Image (cartoon, rainbow, N blue to C red):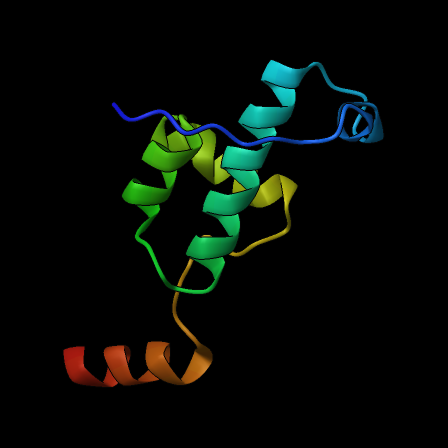
Length: 84
């Protein structure tokens, strides 16, 4: 596993009222949720980035009010038409 160092002002931890370790974990989850929402990564890869199980990541999506599904309405309709 690779480690990276990010320098942040001390005040950012109090912004979310989290200890540095909790803040970093929340950053991982937030980034993974956003990248998933943009369709840049799969749900499995997002869970891995977030450091969560797949079920834990689905719960995080709910918390951030992001759909579990990466399909637009048109894409879903097309998929359903292709199955018929």
